[in-house]
Image 1 (tube, rainbow, N blue to C red):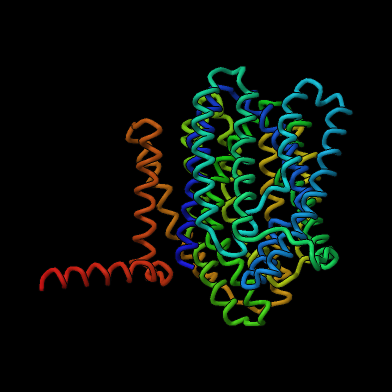
Image 2: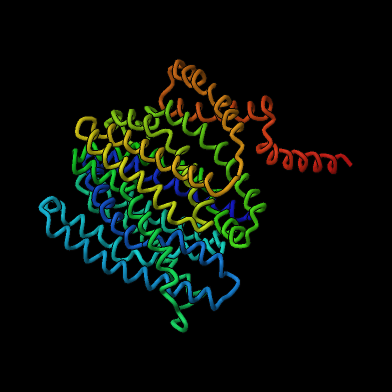
Amino acid sequence: MRKNFIYTVLLSIVNILFPVLSFPYASHVLGPAGIGKVQLAISFAQYFAMFAALGIPIYGIKEAAKHKDDPKKLSGVFTELTTIFFVASMILFAAYLLIIFSFPFFASNRSLYISAGILVLMSFSYADWFFAGIEEFKGITVRSVLIKTISLVLLYSFVKTSADFEKYLFIIVFSILGNQVLSFIMVFRKTNFSFLDIRFRKHMQPLFYLFSATLAASIYTILDTVLLGFLSNDKAVGLYTASVKLIKLTIPIVTSMGVILIPPISKGFSQNNLGEVKKLLDKSFNFLVFLSIPMALGLAILAPECIVIFSGKQFITGSTSMQILSVLPLLIGFGHFFCFQVLMPAGKNKEIFLSIVAGVFTCLALNFILVPFLQEKGASIANIATELIVTITYYYFTRKYYSFRYNWKFMIQSIISSVPFIPIIIGIRLMGLNMILVLVISIIVCSGAYIILQLLLFKNIFLLSFVEPLKNKFLQKKTLGNE
């Protein structure tokens, strides 16, 4: 598990570095309008690709984990789910083409939407669910690093002026599909297609609920950008995209522990070993709280510096949206915790669907009410309200079926340890440094203050579990050196 965690954290770091190295360059070259055009086309295509997935990227992890020690059954699961995925991809691609050629809205940038449509056509090639299920995170990480490195080289080589937004779109498509296709090819080193004794029907009910949940969830995870584009303008989409991308850089780190725990938690539920499940959930909960609270507060306070450094001065008006969205690491982190580490492994797919439906109504209502007047700020408020409703509903169903207790006291300690960020950052700003230095020094000093307070003031058990082994190892080496 430790190696898987290391690879997952490394993958999270790579997923952070890629937009950090790519988006600032692209936003400076293309501007808010250019970024908005590309992001709207990508978001629209990803909306259809999510439909085609039918919930398989999540459901597949559970099924692969269940049969990873039985090659024959594992091959059957891969064949069944990939066949379903392929058929759905073809149907959704046809629907996608029909829509972009039927509505005048798409006429001015139709070439962008056609190019982005490759994401829908090839969506069935997503196979990381298989490797996550058999707990081979090393390959996922290596492939991601390779494709993202090539994508950066392509970006810096071919996107030179504001007219190169089509090239930027192709590079984004490659960064997504390159990894997917490579993973799909690599699957055949572990298994193969086998159409003997396959059964599609057994997957239909759980996939129906997960598909319904995916369909509903996509309304507030992707359609927020699409709705903003329809109800506002390209510039507002660009400003909102800059804010969301910055905030969501932190999400893979916050959820990294939970990702690697899905297979063992699924196994624990299948064996009715709730004691083991509780131990795993405690680790994930403490990890989530320890990281998400300081991240949320730090992002809120440092929003102006982050926006200007990451996207350029022309995006500075987007800093308010970023401050509104800064609580997302906490909300999405808890949503991921209750959904993917409790409800989904326990087979509570209906409850997941109902939770997301509550979010859908919140999202649609608030977007249509707020966006015409507040534009990207309205979309940000709607995003936060939606995630809050969904997370609360997940928690309600978790409490309804299980009596797991969580260390809420740890959350209060983390909030108290994060409060000093406010005077620290204000003091650093008063030093008159440039924005890059303000950001770097603030992150270093605030991180140090947070860890010191957790260790000395609260004697944080979670943090001590990492520090003590390192301390003992150091003392052991020192003792041996003195002998």
